[in-house]
Amino acid sequence: MSWFSGFFIGLFTRHLVTKLLALLLSIGLFGFVQANLMDTQEIARITLVPSLAEDIRDRYVLLTNPFDVTGLMIRGEQIKVEGLARQYRSTVQRVPIDQRMLSPPFGRETASGVIEIPIDANLFRDDVLFGKDVTVERLETVKSIQVAELVTKRARVEVAPALQKLAHDDYEGKLTFVPNMAAVDIRGPKHAFEKDPVRVVVTVRAIADRISTHPPFPGDRGTLTFGDGICEIDWKQGDIAPELQLFLRITPEGGEPLPPGEFRQKLAVSCDATKRKDTITLNEIPIQIRYGLAQKSDLLEHYKALAPLTDAQMAEGLIRQQLKVRLPAAMKGDDAFLGNLVLVLDVATARDETDFVGVRGPEELGERLYVPFYLDVRDRNRADDLQSLRQVVIAVEDEPVAQFQAKKS
Image (cartoon, rainbow, N blue to C red; front, side):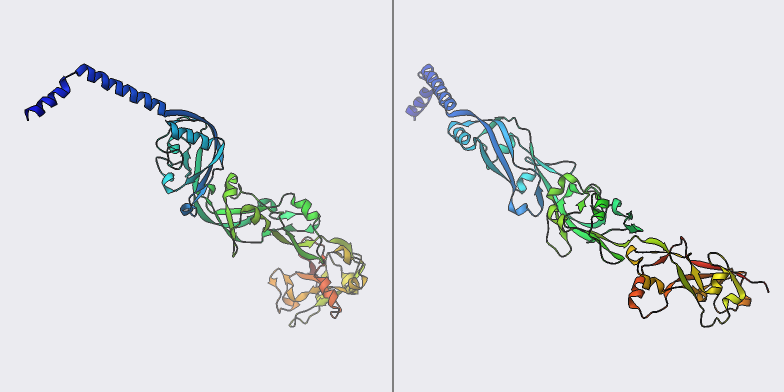
Protein backbone atom coordinates (compact mmCIF):
# COMPACT_ATOMS: atom_id res chain seq x y z
CA MET A 1 0.00 0.00 0.00
CA SER A 2 2.99 2.31 0.35
CA TRP A 3 3.23 2.80 -3.39
CA PHE A 4 -0.45 3.79 -3.56
CA SER A 5 -0.04 6.31 -0.75
CA GLY A 6 2.98 7.79 -2.47
CA PHE A 7 1.11 8.04 -5.72
CA PHE A 8 -1.85 9.69 -4.09
CA ILE A 9 0.23 12.22 -2.17
CA GLY A 10 2.34 12.93 -5.24
CA LEU A 11 -0.79 13.64 -7.26
CA PHE A 12 -1.36 16.80 -5.23
CA THR A 13 2.23 17.78 -4.55
CA ARG A 14 4.36 17.03 -7.61
CA HIS A 15 4.37 19.71 -10.29
CA LEU A 16 1.66 21.66 -8.41
CA VAL A 17 2.21 24.92 -10.30
CA THR A 18 1.99 23.19 -13.65
CA LYS A 19 -1.18 21.45 -12.68
CA LEU A 20 -2.81 24.68 -11.45
CA LEU A 21 -1.91 26.43 -14.66
CA ALA A 22 -3.45 23.56 -16.62
CA LEU A 23 -6.62 23.74 -14.53
CA LEU A 24 -6.96 27.47 -15.05
CA LEU A 25 -6.35 27.01 -18.74
CA SER A 26 -9.11 24.37 -18.88
CA ILE A 27 -11.57 26.63 -17.07
CA GLY A 28 -10.73 29.48 -19.42
CA LEU A 29 -11.16 27.30 -22.46
CA PHE A 30 -14.50 26.04 -21.11
CA GLY A 31 -15.71 29.58 -20.48
CA PHE A 32 -14.55 30.70 -23.91
CA VAL A 33 -16.32 27.81 -25.61
CA GLN A 34 -19.44 28.26 -23.49
CA ALA A 35 -19.54 31.97 -24.26
CA ASN A 36 -19.33 31.22 -27.92
CA LEU A 37 -22.19 28.70 -27.57
CA MET A 38 -24.51 31.34 -25.95
CA ASP A 39 -26.20 34.01 -28.05
CA THR A 40 -28.53 37.01 -27.79
CA GLN A 41 -31.13 37.64 -30.47
CA GLU A 42 -33.87 40.27 -31.00
CA ILE A 43 -37.33 39.37 -32.25
CA ALA A 44 -38.89 42.57 -33.58
CA ARG A 45 -42.50 41.42 -33.45
CA ILE A 46 -44.57 38.36 -32.58
CA THR A 47 -48.34 38.19 -33.00
CA LEU A 48 -49.76 36.25 -30.05
CA VAL A 49 -53.13 34.52 -30.46
CA PRO A 50 -54.51 33.46 -27.06
CA SER A 51 -56.99 30.56 -26.99
CA LEU A 52 -58.67 28.62 -24.22
CA ALA A 53 -57.98 24.95 -23.73
CA GLU A 54 -60.96 22.82 -24.63
CA ASP A 55 -61.54 21.55 -21.09
CA ILE A 56 -62.16 25.06 -19.66
CA ARG A 57 -64.18 26.67 -22.46
CA ASP A 58 -67.49 25.91 -20.75
CA ARG A 59 -66.40 27.74 -17.59
CA TYR A 60 -64.33 30.70 -18.81
CA VAL A 61 -64.35 33.22 -21.60
CA LEU A 62 -61.32 34.83 -23.24
CA LEU A 63 -61.53 38.63 -23.32
CA THR A 64 -58.30 39.33 -25.22
CA ASN A 65 -57.94 39.53 -28.98
CA PRO A 66 -54.70 38.66 -30.81
CA PHE A 67 -52.04 41.32 -30.29
CA ASP A 68 -48.43 42.08 -31.17
CA VAL A 69 -45.42 41.81 -28.85
CA THR A 70 -42.48 43.98 -29.94
CA GLY A 71 -38.87 44.56 -29.02
CA LEU A 72 -38.26 41.08 -27.63
CA MET A 73 -34.63 40.30 -26.71
CA ILE A 74 -33.85 36.66 -25.85
CA ARG A 75 -30.69 34.97 -24.65
CA GLY A 76 -29.69 31.32 -24.42
CA GLU A 77 -27.81 28.57 -26.15
CA GLN A 78 -26.83 29.74 -29.57
CA ILE A 79 -28.40 26.93 -31.48
CA LYS A 80 -31.72 27.27 -29.60
CA VAL A 81 -31.86 31.07 -29.67
CA GLU A 82 -31.08 31.26 -33.36
CA GLY A 83 -33.79 28.71 -34.07
CA LEU A 84 -36.35 30.63 -32.02
CA ALA A 85 -35.43 33.90 -33.68
CA ARG A 86 -35.98 32.39 -37.12
CA GLN A 87 -39.21 30.68 -36.05
CA TYR A 88 -40.91 33.63 -34.38
CA ARG A 89 -39.69 36.54 -36.46
CA SER A 90 -42.87 38.30 -37.77
CA THR A 91 -45.04 35.22 -37.26
CA VAL A 92 -48.22 34.28 -35.45
CA GLN A 93 -47.90 32.24 -32.28
CA ARG A 94 -50.81 30.48 -30.58
CA VAL A 95 -50.87 30.77 -26.78
CA PRO A 96 -53.08 28.05 -25.27
CA ILE A 97 -54.56 29.01 -21.89
CA ASP A 98 -55.25 26.05 -19.61
CA GLN A 99 -56.27 25.72 -15.97
CA ARG A 100 -52.63 25.80 -14.88
CA MET A 101 -52.10 29.26 -16.37
CA LEU A 102 -55.08 30.77 -14.53
CA SER A 103 -53.22 30.55 -11.22
CA PRO A 104 -49.87 31.92 -9.97
CA PRO A 105 -47.15 32.25 -11.07
CA PHE A 106 -48.88 32.95 -14.41
CA GLY A 107 -52.35 34.35 -13.71
CA ARG A 108 -53.74 36.59 -10.97
CA GLU A 109 -57.32 37.59 -10.23
CA THR A 110 -58.12 41.30 -10.10
CA ALA A 111 -60.65 43.07 -7.88
CA SER A 112 -63.25 42.95 -10.66
CA GLY A 113 -62.93 39.18 -10.91
CA VAL A 114 -60.98 39.19 -14.19
CA ILE A 115 -57.96 36.86 -14.34
CA GLU A 116 -54.95 38.60 -15.88
CA ILE A 117 -51.98 36.70 -17.32
CA PRO A 118 -49.16 39.23 -17.85
CA ILE A 119 -47.11 39.02 -21.03
CA ASP A 120 -43.76 38.94 -19.27
CA ALA A 121 -40.53 36.97 -19.15
CA ASN A 122 -42.15 34.38 -16.89
CA LEU A 123 -44.80 33.56 -19.53
CA PHE A 124 -42.20 33.02 -22.26
CA ARG A 125 -40.32 30.53 -20.07
CA ASP A 126 -43.30 28.21 -20.40
CA ASP A 127 -42.53 25.17 -22.53
CA VAL A 128 -45.30 26.06 -24.95
CA LEU A 129 -43.37 29.21 -25.91
CA PHE A 130 -39.58 29.55 -25.46
CA GLY A 131 -38.94 27.15 -22.57
CA LYS A 132 -36.87 27.42 -19.39
CA ASP A 133 -33.48 27.46 -21.18
CA VAL A 134 -34.16 30.83 -22.80
CA THR A 135 -34.12 34.11 -20.91
CA VAL A 136 -36.13 37.15 -21.99
CA GLU A 137 -33.88 40.12 -21.30
CA ARG A 138 -36.04 42.88 -22.80
CA LEU A 139 -39.76 43.15 -23.54
CA GLU A 140 -41.21 46.46 -24.75
CA THR A 141 -44.88 45.45 -24.92
CA VAL A 142 -46.71 45.65 -21.60
CA LYS A 143 -49.98 43.76 -21.97
CA SER A 144 -51.91 40.96 -20.34
CA ILE A 145 -54.21 38.17 -21.44
CA GLN A 146 -57.59 38.54 -19.72
CA VAL A 147 -59.89 35.66 -18.86
CA ALA A 148 -63.23 35.82 -17.00
CA GLU A 149 -65.46 33.28 -15.34
CA LEU A 150 -68.68 32.53 -17.23
CA VAL A 151 -72.05 32.83 -15.48
CA THR A 152 -75.66 32.51 -16.64
CA LYS A 153 -78.23 35.09 -15.55
CA ARG A 154 -82.00 35.03 -15.90
CA ALA A 155 -83.07 38.42 -17.26
CA ARG A 156 -86.52 39.92 -17.67
CA VAL A 157 -87.23 41.81 -20.89
CA GLU A 158 -88.64 45.33 -20.46
CA VAL A 159 -89.36 48.33 -22.64
CA ALA A 160 -87.42 51.53 -22.08
CA PRO A 161 -89.11 54.35 -20.13
CA ALA A 162 -89.25 56.41 -23.34
CA LEU A 163 -91.71 53.88 -24.81
CA GLN A 164 -94.02 53.70 -21.81
CA LYS A 165 -97.33 55.56 -22.16
CA LEU A 166 -96.30 57.39 -25.30
CA ALA A 167 -98.69 59.97 -26.79
CA HIS A 168 -99.00 60.46 -30.55
CA ASP A 169 -101.10 62.77 -32.73
CA ASP A 170 -102.44 59.93 -34.89
CA TYR A 171 -103.91 57.92 -31.99
CA GLU A 172 -106.06 58.51 -28.95
CA GLY A 173 -104.83 57.96 -25.43
CA LYS A 174 -101.44 56.66 -24.42
CA LEU A 175 -99.62 53.94 -26.33
CA THR A 176 -98.19 51.41 -23.92
CA PHE A 177 -95.64 49.13 -25.58
CA VAL A 178 -94.86 45.56 -24.51
CA PRO A 179 -91.97 43.31 -25.67
CA ASN A 180 -92.56 40.10 -27.60
CA MET A 181 -90.80 38.00 -24.94
CA ALA A 182 -90.89 38.09 -21.16
CA ALA A 183 -87.51 36.66 -20.12
CA VAL A 184 -84.24 35.29 -21.51
CA ASP A 185 -81.08 33.60 -20.24
CA ILE A 186 -77.85 35.57 -20.67
CA ARG A 187 -74.46 33.87 -20.40
CA GLY A 188 -71.34 35.97 -20.23
CA PRO A 189 -68.43 37.23 -18.12
CA LYS A 190 -69.28 37.46 -14.45
CA HIS A 191 -68.23 41.11 -14.20
CA ALA A 192 -70.47 42.10 -17.14
CA PHE A 193 -73.51 42.11 -14.86
CA GLU A 194 -73.35 45.12 -12.59
CA LYS A 195 -76.52 44.48 -10.57
CA ASP A 196 -79.21 41.91 -9.85
CA PRO A 197 -81.74 41.35 -11.23
CA VAL A 198 -80.42 41.60 -14.76
CA ARG A 199 -82.69 43.24 -17.34
CA VAL A 200 -82.82 43.51 -21.12
CA VAL A 201 -84.19 46.99 -21.79
CA VAL A 202 -85.68 47.30 -25.29
CA THR A 203 -86.09 50.64 -27.02
CA VAL A 204 -86.83 52.04 -30.49
CA ARG A 205 -85.04 55.17 -31.61
CA ALA A 206 -87.16 57.96 -33.16
CA ILE A 207 -90.31 56.04 -32.23
CA ALA A 208 -92.66 58.94 -33.06
CA ASP A 209 -91.34 59.13 -36.63
CA ARG A 210 -91.61 55.36 -37.01
CA ILE A 211 -95.23 55.42 -35.81
CA SER A 212 -96.09 58.10 -38.36
CA THR A 213 -94.72 55.99 -41.21
CA HIS A 214 -96.13 52.73 -39.86
CA PRO A 215 -98.61 51.04 -42.25
CA PRO A 216 -102.15 51.89 -41.03
CA PHE A 217 -104.25 49.04 -39.70
CA PRO A 218 -107.82 48.55 -40.95
CA GLY A 219 -110.67 49.64 -38.73
CA ASP A 220 -110.66 51.85 -35.67
CA ARG A 221 -108.51 49.68 -33.44
CA GLY A 222 -105.40 47.66 -34.20
CA THR A 223 -101.89 46.78 -33.13
CA LEU A 224 -98.70 48.68 -33.85
CA THR A 225 -95.73 46.31 -34.03
CA PHE A 226 -92.07 47.26 -34.42
CA GLY A 227 -89.51 44.54 -35.11
CA ASP A 228 -87.32 43.28 -37.96
CA GLY A 229 -84.18 44.78 -36.45
CA ILE A 230 -85.72 48.14 -35.51
CA CYS A 231 -85.52 47.46 -31.78
CA GLU A 232 -82.33 48.15 -29.87
CA ILE A 233 -81.04 47.11 -26.46
CA ASP A 234 -80.09 49.76 -23.93
CA TRP A 235 -77.33 47.79 -22.20
CA LYS A 236 -76.45 50.43 -19.62
CA GLN A 237 -80.09 50.85 -18.62
CA GLY A 238 -80.22 47.10 -17.99
CA ASP A 239 -77.09 47.24 -15.79
CA ILE A 240 -75.04 45.24 -18.31
CA ALA A 241 -71.60 46.62 -19.21
CA PRO A 242 -71.97 47.79 -22.85
CA GLU A 243 -68.31 47.12 -23.68
CA LEU A 244 -68.76 43.42 -22.84
CA GLN A 245 -71.86 42.75 -24.93
CA LEU A 246 -69.83 41.00 -27.63
CA PHE A 247 -69.00 38.26 -25.13
CA LEU A 248 -72.66 37.59 -24.29
CA ARG A 249 -74.87 34.80 -25.56
CA ILE A 250 -78.64 35.25 -25.17
CA THR A 251 -81.12 32.36 -25.15
CA PRO A 252 -84.83 33.15 -25.72
CA GLU A 253 -87.48 30.83 -24.29
CA GLY A 254 -87.25 27.53 -26.15
CA GLY A 255 -84.53 28.85 -28.46
CA GLU A 256 -80.82 28.51 -29.09
CA PRO A 257 -78.06 30.74 -27.67
CA LEU A 258 -77.58 33.76 -29.91
CA PRO A 259 -75.01 36.56 -30.07
CA PRO A 260 -76.53 39.96 -29.26
CA GLY A 261 -76.77 41.02 -32.91
CA GLU A 262 -78.81 37.98 -33.94
CA PHE A 263 -80.96 38.18 -30.79
CA ARG A 264 -81.74 41.83 -31.57
CA GLN A 265 -83.22 40.77 -34.92
CA LYS A 266 -85.82 38.71 -33.02
CA LEU A 267 -86.90 41.54 -30.71
CA ALA A 268 -90.18 43.38 -31.24
CA VAL A 269 -92.43 45.70 -29.27
CA SER A 270 -96.13 46.23 -29.91
CA CYS A 271 -99.13 48.05 -28.51
CA ASP A 272 -102.86 48.24 -29.04
CA ALA A 273 -103.93 51.55 -30.53
CA THR A 274 -107.13 53.44 -31.31
CA LYS A 275 -107.13 55.89 -34.17
CA ARG A 276 -107.79 59.46 -33.20
CA LYS A 277 -111.44 60.47 -33.77
CA ASP A 278 -113.00 63.61 -35.21
CA THR A 279 -115.73 65.50 -33.36
CA ILE A 280 -119.00 66.24 -35.17
CA THR A 281 -122.40 67.58 -34.12
CA LEU A 282 -125.34 65.37 -35.05
CA ASN A 283 -128.16 67.13 -36.88
CA GLU A 284 -130.76 65.33 -34.81
CA ILE A 285 -130.98 62.23 -32.68
CA PRO A 286 -134.04 60.63 -31.00
CA ILE A 287 -134.23 60.27 -27.22
CA GLN A 288 -135.23 56.92 -25.76
CA ILE A 289 -135.97 56.40 -22.06
CA ARG A 290 -135.45 52.91 -20.70
CA TYR A 291 -136.79 51.85 -17.35
CA GLY A 292 -135.93 48.89 -15.19
CA LEU A 293 -138.48 46.07 -14.96
CA ALA A 294 -139.60 47.17 -11.49
CA GLN A 295 -139.71 50.86 -12.32
CA LYS A 296 -143.19 51.76 -13.53
CA SER A 297 -143.48 55.54 -13.08
CA ASP A 298 -142.90 58.12 -15.81
CA LEU A 299 -139.66 60.11 -15.43
CA LEU A 300 -141.08 63.18 -17.12
CA GLU A 301 -144.15 63.16 -14.88
CA HIS A 302 -142.15 63.72 -11.71
CA TYR A 303 -138.93 65.45 -12.90
CA LYS A 304 -137.92 68.27 -15.20
CA ALA A 305 -134.76 68.11 -17.26
CA LEU A 306 -131.67 70.19 -16.49
CA ALA A 307 -128.56 70.80 -18.61
CA PRO A 308 -127.30 69.32 -20.82
CA LEU A 309 -130.88 68.33 -21.79
CA THR A 310 -133.99 70.51 -21.72
CA ASP A 311 -137.65 69.86 -20.98
CA ALA A 312 -138.51 70.77 -24.58
CA GLN A 313 -136.09 68.17 -25.94
CA MET A 314 -137.42 65.56 -23.56
CA ALA A 315 -141.00 66.36 -24.51
CA GLU A 316 -140.25 66.19 -28.24
CA GLY A 317 -138.05 63.15 -27.78
CA LEU A 318 -135.44 64.63 -30.10
CA ILE A 319 -132.15 66.56 -29.82
CA ARG A 320 -131.26 68.92 -32.67
CA GLN A 321 -127.80 70.32 -33.44
CA GLN A 322 -126.53 69.90 -29.89
CA LEU A 323 -125.10 66.44 -29.27
CA LYS A 324 -121.43 66.18 -30.18
CA VAL A 325 -119.89 62.79 -30.83
CA ARG A 326 -116.41 61.60 -31.71
CA LEU A 327 -115.91 59.00 -34.40
CA PRO A 328 -113.35 57.89 -37.03
CA ALA A 329 -113.15 60.27 -39.98
CA ALA A 330 -114.26 57.56 -42.43
CA MET A 331 -117.62 57.28 -40.65
CA LYS A 332 -118.56 60.95 -40.86
CA GLY A 333 -120.26 60.50 -44.22
CA ASP A 334 -122.19 57.33 -43.32
CA ASP A 335 -125.66 58.94 -43.14
CA ALA A 336 -127.48 55.61 -42.85
CA PHE A 337 -125.51 54.71 -39.75
CA LEU A 338 -125.81 58.18 -38.21
CA GLY A 339 -129.56 58.14 -38.86
CA ASN A 340 -129.88 54.86 -36.96
CA LEU A 341 -128.38 56.30 -33.75
CA VAL A 342 -130.50 56.92 -30.67
CA LEU A 343 -129.68 58.52 -27.31
CA VAL A 344 -130.68 56.21 -24.47
CA LEU A 345 -131.43 57.50 -20.93
CA ASP A 346 -130.95 54.53 -18.61
CA VAL A 347 -133.29 55.25 -15.69
CA ALA A 348 -132.67 51.74 -14.34
CA THR A 349 -129.15 52.78 -13.29
CA ALA A 350 -130.01 56.33 -12.17
CA ARG A 351 -128.90 57.60 -8.77
CA ASP A 352 -129.83 60.43 -6.46
CA GLU A 353 -128.51 61.95 -3.24
CA THR A 354 -129.36 58.71 -1.47
CA ASP A 355 -127.33 56.72 -4.03
CA PHE A 356 -128.74 53.92 -6.20
CA VAL A 357 -132.41 54.12 -7.24
CA GLY A 358 -133.12 50.41 -7.27
CA VAL A 359 -136.87 49.67 -7.11
CA ARG A 360 -137.94 52.77 -5.21
CA GLY A 361 -140.78 54.90 -6.50
CA PRO A 362 -140.53 58.61 -7.30
CA GLU A 363 -141.99 59.55 -3.92
CA GLU A 364 -138.94 57.95 -2.27
CA LEU A 365 -136.31 59.67 -4.41
CA GLY A 366 -134.29 62.79 -3.60
CA GLU A 367 -134.61 66.27 -5.11
CA ARG A 368 -131.95 65.67 -7.79
CA LEU A 369 -131.80 62.62 -10.07
CA TYR A 370 -128.76 61.65 -12.19
CA VAL A 371 -129.49 59.47 -15.22
CA PRO A 372 -126.64 57.99 -17.32
CA PHE A 373 -127.08 58.20 -21.09
CA TYR A 374 -125.32 56.52 -24.01
CA LEU A 375 -125.60 55.89 -27.72
CA ASP A 376 -127.37 52.90 -29.21
CA VAL A 377 -128.98 51.96 -32.52
CA ARG A 378 -132.76 51.70 -33.08
CA ASP A 379 -132.55 48.96 -35.70
CA ARG A 380 -130.36 46.27 -34.19
CA ASN A 381 -130.72 44.06 -37.22
CA ARG A 382 -128.10 46.15 -38.99
CA ALA A 383 -125.02 44.16 -37.96
CA ASP A 384 -122.55 46.65 -39.47
CA ASP A 385 -124.09 49.45 -37.38
CA LEU A 386 -123.57 47.46 -34.18
CA GLN A 387 -119.90 47.11 -35.12
CA SER A 388 -119.57 50.80 -35.97
CA LEU A 389 -121.28 51.81 -32.73
CA ARG A 390 -118.26 50.59 -30.76
CA GLN A 391 -116.16 53.30 -32.41
CA VAL A 392 -118.42 56.23 -31.50
CA VAL A 393 -118.33 58.07 -28.16
CA ILE A 394 -120.21 61.07 -26.81
CA ALA A 395 -117.85 64.05 -26.66
CA VAL A 396 -117.94 64.94 -22.97
CA GLU A 397 -115.04 65.06 -20.51
CA ASP A 398 -116.77 63.11 -17.74
CA GLU A 399 -119.25 60.26 -17.70
CA PRO A 400 -122.37 61.23 -19.75
CA VAL A 401 -125.07 61.92 -17.13
CA ALA A 402 -128.34 63.88 -17.46
CA GLN A 403 -129.66 65.73 -14.41
CA PHE A 404 -133.34 66.03 -13.44
CA GLN A 405 -134.93 68.18 -10.76
CA ALA A 406 -137.99 66.87 -8.85
CA LYS A 407 -141.15 68.84 -9.72
CA LYS A 408 -142.96 70.58 -6.87
CA SER A 409 -146.31 68.95 -6.11
